[in-house]
Structure formats: C-alpha cells, structure tokens
Length: 273
Image (cartoon, rainbow, N blue to C red; front, side, top):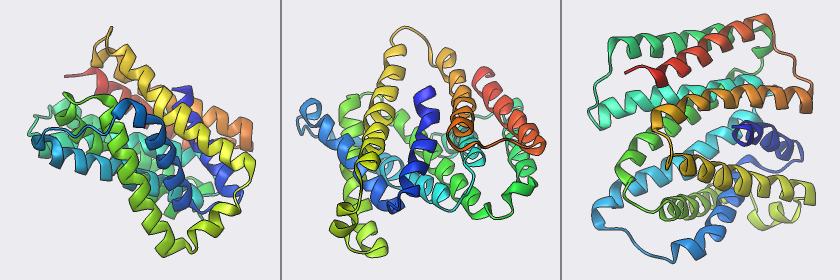
C-alpha cells in the first residue's frame, strides 16, 4: 500500500519535469510489457477469454493511466486526486452489478452513496478552486479502474503474467498512438526525458505496477479476498503522507472531513456482505 500510495507523487514529479502525461503512461506500460515477456512466452488464451481480456487491457492499461496522469497534470495539489481514486471501489461494485449481475445489498448502496458524499464535500475545499478538472479526470480514472476489476473476475483462470502482459502491450501501443496524435513528436519528447524522470517512470512500472501487485496476489494464497481488500483503504493515507513529505501539502479541515467519510465508506464496503 505504501508503493501504491507513492505512485501519485512519483508521477507528479515526472510531470513537473515537463514529460507529457500520455507519453509517460505509454513508457510505463512498455516497461511492464518488456519485463513480463519471459514469463508470458507469447502464449494466447482460450478464445472465451478474448473479450474480457481486451476490455480489461484497454480499461486498465490505457484509460486508467491516461486519466491518472491527466488528473495529476491538471492539478496543483495531489491529495484530492489520491482520494478520488478510492471511488474505484464503489464503481467496481456497481460494474459487477451491471456486468456480472451480482446483487448489491442495501447497506452497500448506502455506503456507495456515502463515499460520493465524501467526494462532494471535498469539492467545497477552497484549495480546489483551480483543480476541478483534475478531480474530474480522477473520477474517470476510478470509473475505469472499477470496470477493469469487474472484468478481471472473468479472468481468474488465466496466468497473472498473461493478464498484465496483455495490459502492457495494449497500453503501450494505444497510448503511444494517442501521444503522437495529441502531444506531438514521440521520439523528440523521449529524447528530452532526463535520467531522474526515467528512474521515476521505472519505479512506477517495476515497484508499483509489478511488485506491489505481485505481493497482493501472493497474499491471496494465504488469506481470503475479504481479509486483504480492506487494506486498500490504507494506500490513500500513505499517498497523502508522501505528498506532504514531497510537496509540503497540508490538508484542510474540509478535505480531512471528506477524506474520513470516503475512506471509512470504502473500508466498510470491503467488510460487509
């Protein structure tokens, strides 16, 4: 959860070094794909997995990282973006209801509503006057992360390396095309990236996208999903602490109130039936 929380400040540091946001996302996914090639070995899944795997790869490998980086690019403060990402949990539950036809209890509906109320309270934070666009992109990031999690439930029989490699190759190719079309000359932008930015991009790919996820999957061998998932509520706390250490961001009382509501609602969503 420390690694997940650190991803947002690390990405903001890269953006502050004038690296285009979509280009950064494409390079991150390229590194993920290259590292996973020896484990994937270019094996193709059964055709019944094609549709959910493609949707998962586009949602997770492309749209999540586009909107994550755009949310940070258009925000001068990071903490609300980190907290906004927690909406992925209620969005994931809603996606499971519509896509997988899972039932949502009254208690879960109440907590989903409460989590959105917490985000609404944060909107009244005076510091967000020039950051609404960033929070909007963060909400889209959470939406597609939740959608990806719903489709990942249909991919549980596939090797983890195959799933992540698919997201990596889809992410890199599609993000590269979008970067060329929107951000300009792909190669010239790469040449301008300094060594510190390359280190931070590598950190996001290796430590966050690979190691942190692999650690979570390792825990699934010994503990139930219900025991592990509540710990996801910790990553915004670590992220906000790291943002304070890195950028000196001090949360306002409005943000703290909204944050407590959001994190508590998300935590309880993991705990109840």
